[in-house]
Image 1 (cartoon, rainbow, N blue to C red):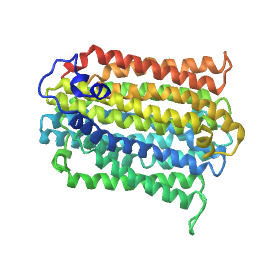
Image 2 (image 1 turned 30 degrees about the vertical axis):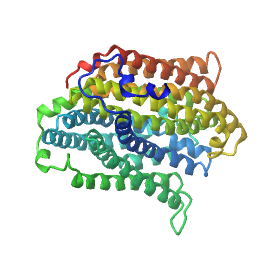
Image 3 (image 1 turned 90 degrees about the horizontal axis):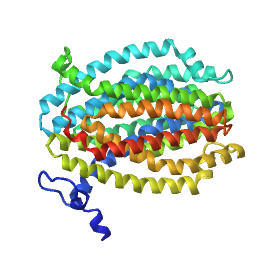
Image 4 (image 1 turned 120 degrees about the vertical axis):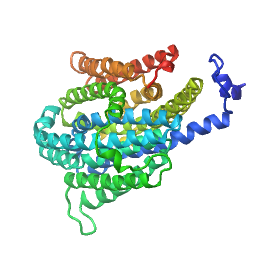
Length: 464
């Protein structure tokens, strides 16, 4: 009986079938092959910040806050490219389903051209506004100088980072998720090695502290960029085509903007919400904010696991919609949800029973460990809603229903999370715990909204 619950035909029992349905082994296998490399890629991508924070924590909690306070300002710079890459993945996945390699390559080259121009502009803006932006983000006098140094060095690597992101987004859409995984593995290995050498000064290298962590990050970005470019020589579906880089093709640009425009609104809402959320918490003081940053780094690793499932869902929904098989799109979303539940159970157990151990990786301060352990209990419940909403959002993005996802981001991330957190922290005086209750409310709202939108089914009729 239990086995039947996981059979594709059972999962599609209320769905009109449009063709042959794969076996359970084929369906779960396809989802696993698509999601696993994406999960590893997302996890390793998140490890950059995690490793920097972990290795910098050996210097002290103020160094952790110096690195952590730069995260949201950096993400503001990257948000346009993240939105662009949402469109790239969705469009190339659809062309993959239609087996139109020529159009897919044109989309990639146009996206790289747009990225390169925007990256130059955003790098200059980021370098010039570093100190006032970080000051507004909540950086205190005791760590503002280290924050500016870290932010400016990492921002200098923006061009390499965003071009790598775009190539990887295209490879994911084409189903080549192992390529993006490999580039992130190389990047993180290089980053860890140079963190080890440069933060505290080992094997004859200078002890550069926070500055060393930033340099290590940029060296890791460079390694990833080289690997991503090399992948375009080996790919059988997408490859580097210099002719498509000579000028803009306005038809393709409009297609990218159509999908990415709403994704950009979503990213803008995310960054505004996260920025204000962090600013509210930073005002609690260095100790509380340092504790929060440690917990956020732990949460981000779990979120990155769910992000892999979301990326896999986006690509599979895009491909199956291109094949005119919306029934299979529904199937892979349901399979993704089951995988998300299994992942959440494992993560929840880790947060509940290993909370003090996880906090102890970053600090030996008993107060921080105890406070962080309580936050991880909230995180244990939140992870179920986080991973589920990521899969639903991945489905809607892959189908082109990005406007709805953007609207939910506006309501939930930009309003509910910072607004409720402020009320919980200050008027109700719950302190840092209140901020995490605000995060929980945000994730619950987006999960329920995504589930309802998925069940209504309008996304299956969108053409891109």
